[in-house]
Image 1 (cartoon, rainbow, N blue to C red):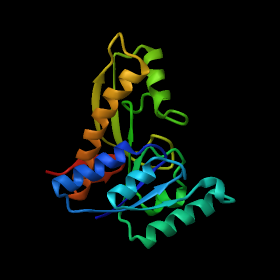
Image 2 (image 1 turned 180 degrees about the horizontal axis):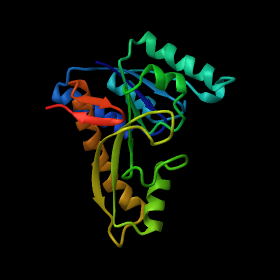
Image 3 (image 1 turned 180 degrees about the vertical axis):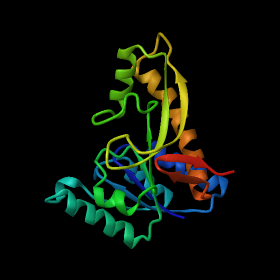
Length: 205
C-alpha cells in the first residue's frame, strides 16, 4: 500500500504514524506528504523522514474543481493507494473523495458525532467540550466523505475529562490517545481488514 499524508500544521501525528509503521514493519510505503501551508513544520518532519512533499493550496486555484484536479495529479504521479489526513485544515475536494472512496481516513479529537463539523478542529474542539461540561471525550478515526466529520466511523477511544482540565491538558491526553488509535487503524487498513457496507464498518479477523 502506497500512502499519502495530508497535513497543514506541526505534523506530530504524521511523524508518529510513519515512525510507528516503520518500527512495526507494516507492509506499506510512506510515499508523499501534501501540505496546504508552505510554512508548516510538517514539511521539515517529512524531509527528516525521507518523504517527498508538495504544497497544494486551495487559494492558488480558481475553483474547488481545479484544486481537486491538482491534488489528484499529485496523487496519481506518486501512485497513491490510501490517504491519511493529519491535521489537514482544508476541505477535501469532492473529486478526491470520489476517487478515493473509503480510502481516505481522518482522526478527530472528540467522540463523533459529538463536537464535529465545520470549524471544529484543534483547540476549538477541546474548548467546546469543556464549555459543555462533558465528562468524557475522546478520539475518532473515520472515513472521509463529502461532509466535515461525517464519514463512516472506524474506531473510537474514550478519554476522561478531569474537573481541573484546561484546553492544553485535555488536548495533550486526547492527542496521545488519538495517535495510538490512528496507528491501530492504519495497521488494519494496510492488512485490508476494514470493510464498509452501507456506511457500516466491519473489522475482519
